[in-house]
Amino acid sequence: MASYSSTPTQEATNGGPVKSEGSNGSMKLKKEISLLNGVCLIVGNMIGSGIFVSPKGVLIHSASYGLSLVVWTVGGIFSVFGALCYAELGTTITKSGASYAYILEAFGGFMAFIRLWTSLLIIEPTSQAIIAITFSNYMVQPIFPTCIAPYIANRLLAAACICLLTFVNCAYVKWGTRVQDFFTYAKVIALIAVIITGLVKIGQGHTQNFEGLFEGSSQDPGGIALALYSALFSYSGWDTLNFVTEEIKNPERNLPLAIAISMPIVTVIYILTNVAYYTILPMNAILDSDAVAVTFADQVFGVMNWTIPLAVALSCFGGLNASILASSRLFFVGSREGHLPDYLCMIHVHRYTPVPALLFNGLMALIYLCVEDVFKLINYYSFSYWFFVGLSILGQLYLRWKQPDRKRPLKLSLFYPIVFCLLTVFLVVVPLYSDTINSLIGIGIALSGVPVYFLCCYTPAYKRPLWLRSYIVSLKHWLQLTNILIN
Image (cartoon, rainbow, N blue to C red; front, side, top):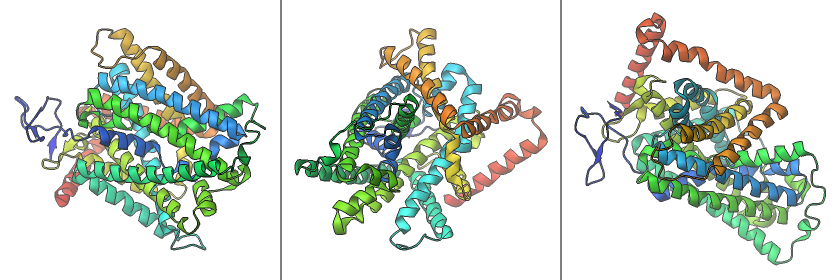
């Protein structure tokens, strides 16, 4: 293993990195993510299991098919605004780590550490554990068609999924991106099959569900706000590529281009998939279903209805791969900036992958698999997630004012970040209004990082308590031993 160095690294003619002058043998991650890989990462992470399993959050609060489709469209447009802002940030601040890197650049180490702390403690491991469990549920469903699968069997399969994808991403970056490409194609093809089926039915005259399209629409501003919140949450994941900026080939071109390609694809797929659901299923069937796509398939796919549960499992597998790839880079960059132990920013000397960061990420996800009510933990991070996304885009405005002459390969109109900042105020306020207790718990989790920052980052190493220094050394030795065993 060799530690990361910020010293620039030249590209060899064969595509591998070579040592630059004065690098003292330090290494960098290779630029192996192409434009197509980038598109698949964004699309694969945005399109998770939600559009297959439970797209009813928007419908519950909008109360009509017409208004729900308007909300899905508006949510897509607002998400495009956020993604475009991140395209400018990613080409201006060419560091991996997404909002962590941007907050660090604009507001300094303290706020960046709190962002990292919430990701480490709740956001990343919880979401990965839940995706793995959902994958496991749909994989074991055919084996236990008439009963609930054993708890242990479900969690063991979820753990095996996390371990397998962690190994794949430790092996080579290319392996991880190829897995991502394949499973993104699979989930998009499955959704296209749903869309085509719906459009064919519309062509055959099955339009009765669209009569009185806006009849019964919610008149409550709070209900419409919650519907939009649900839609925007479904669109989250457009920042995935910003976590791996340093590994993108020609990022000044490919990062914004991948975002520009991915966002319309996902928006159109989401809207047309819902149109297909609405064509076949009455509103009460959608609201009562635990897996809308499965109910849809039972009605129209006949003996091929097994393809949708498989598609959900494949979608989860691809989404989990994208999450592991992205979050491991977040921990890698956090270590490099001194906010996590320095051995997490080490790179495998032959594979050019951040093995320690990947192992740490996998370990955290496995720990959260042991929490029986892990699904409840996801409720704690809505406030923090949108707060830090908004803070990073506020940092974009701050840097525009503070560093007006800084090189910006992509420079948007200020209209986009201002509108999205106002939107994130809404996204932060809504959970406080609709889920006050869980939001306050989320705030408490974020604030728990304050003493950790001052003890482990702000305080010089020689002034830290002896027990803390001994623990860090022991953990470092354990990780080095693990790496030796892997090699």
